[in-house]
Image 1 (cartoon, rainbow, N blue to C red):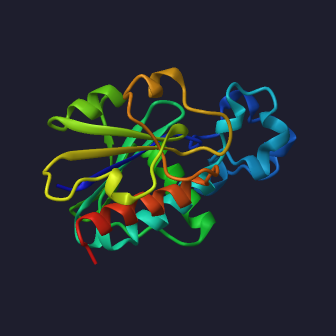
Image 2 (cartoon, rainbow, N blue to C red):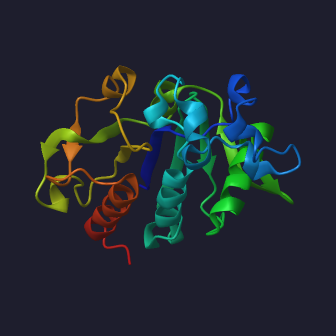
Length: 224
């Protein structure tokens, strides 16, 4: 069974219409340049001060880091990884394991803007990123008898990777990781599972958590 990785409440969205006239936004915004249409805290910080949940918003760089780690892993190259991202606006996208995410940040932002505008990314006959038509609960129930764990600093600290995954058990393991820098999961996320897991006594970046969870799974199932 593949590991199902879900990055939730990701700070990935187009610039909200009601702040598009702000000087910090107008300075870089162009209808001809996809990357300029994505909300980015590093560029739009002053325009974001009154946005709800602003601590979680405008951070496409976090998703970039997580996806580079996940898609470049041996687990993904062996077709044993399924990746979804869930945005702060409750949109869910699945990534084809064969997609090659640009390492250049601006090119990545352009791709994500195009995804949010068009709803999918396709090339030829291949669908590289597709939108899941449903909410997180419907996504979870799509998988038979899933074992859902939420990675949180508030969870039970595990000391070894074998405490998280059990070798020889064919089970749909779903790992939920926060795709944001500050704040915490919403109540809706916490209500999805009572299985809260911490993999370090320290607060870790989402990219580090992504990398370690994938590595734990690789070690458990001896995937090289």
